[in-house]
Length: 307
Image 1 (cartoon, rainbow, N blue to C red):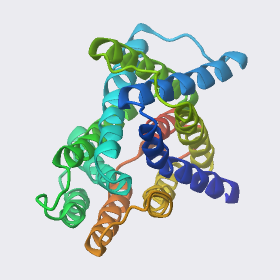
Image 2: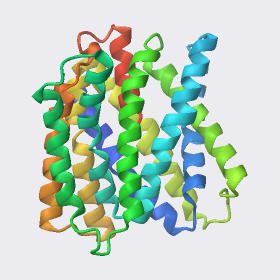
Image 3: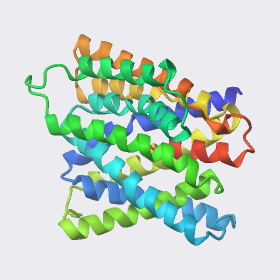
């Protein structure tokens, strides 16, 4: 149990450092598309290589290939593009706080998909998170980048749909296999996007490779692997609650390393958003919290870990 707690907290810290790493990468002249391509290409190589050496890649059905292509090349890639765009345009701490609207949205979407009665436990988390959102955003005419805010909120909405859909359509695959193929399809999406829009450029400063590697290894491979390790012991719901350390680390790291500041109303709003997120996690019917051996439970964990 103690190892599971430590693994989950280290995972959350690694995820929380990702906006700071991305901020430094942008400072070397790297574009959003290039950073995401490098992130997913490195992560996919590590995950697929590790599974290949262990003989655990397995054979997928046509439906599984199509599902993973939709989740990884479509929804996961879109969520990442929106989130990293938000980090580029607004304060990283603000971007990660807005992303944490997603647990409340998941509770509502899950109720719709499961066709359960819309109770206060479903509506409450999203209302609390929206109340916090009004404090975090404040006045949009106070110099805040509207497109950056919309990108962060869009990332939260996309991530919520991704979790709800993914946890229901690919429950037959293990978390490691799922993540490996998700990152592979995301790599393909950003390669095609970059070629189509001309957004790929390796002419950034050499230091950019260091920050791209940090995003890929620390905030993707290590973060996801440790989340799996923690969730196997604790269950996905408990692990998700402990992962609320992520935005705290993001805010502190941005303050210490980037000199960014959030006003007291914004910090209070962030606390309210996180309160709604915890409520949303607790209110969401998670099928896999029963046992680590339950394939459905592992898949719920796998999907929600890929942030």
